[in-house]
Image (cartoon, rainbow, N blue to C red):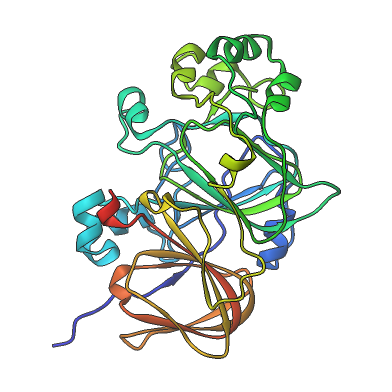
Length: 345
């Protein structure tokens, strides 16, 4: 009697409405027309809803059901026993394609402990950006304050909505495809216009937005109902000089290895990401829940149970643990996103 194994699933686009412009780079990657300037995020393999929403943001599987429900109904097959023991029946991961058609506001995210206390969530929102494309004259990102500032100063900037001071206090880092930036919880940051990233996050939608005016409808949407004085308690106001920034920023474009570990040391407590550069010889993949984003080329994903799945530029797949040992063949570049190492949680 044969056992039915789960196989990878190709996912359609999932672009919940956002407050900022963008989306052309996502449309170009996927090879479709850009229907709206306000489709700047594609939530891939998402078991996460937008803040305060019941289902908006969730990935719907081709059969019509939610990925979240499928994982909950069969968590061991989707996630593996070690993951299940460490993180429960959450995938522990949210992956987005994010195309900043305008600069995003200065904001930050809560730690696990803060999210537990104020949002009744096991997960905060540590994240990382894998730059996969840029456009415009000066694409850059803004991670962390250049020098230590007081929480009182930040509170004053927030009350006055002093955008020039907020942005001016942050580091300004030019980026190109292949650069990655790890954003620990609490770190203030913004993404500049013309930066297209694959973004890994913990599976929440907790954004505490200091610079809300001209972006959000109200200050309440900036502090998520807890007040800015409380929100700022979880803000990292320490200075990040050039040497310290090296611990979160990596430059991987020149690495031509078949598998490139993309993210900063220590980030595997929250998520993992590799770039697979397949040039004929198969690249092996150990069993794991994963989200795949195909950046270019074409090839095939084969699983140990005989499954064969075509891969082409713009495809996104969710891969269950139960798919087992797999390999990618062909000529293509794939970003493989995975949850944290269970032993790190």
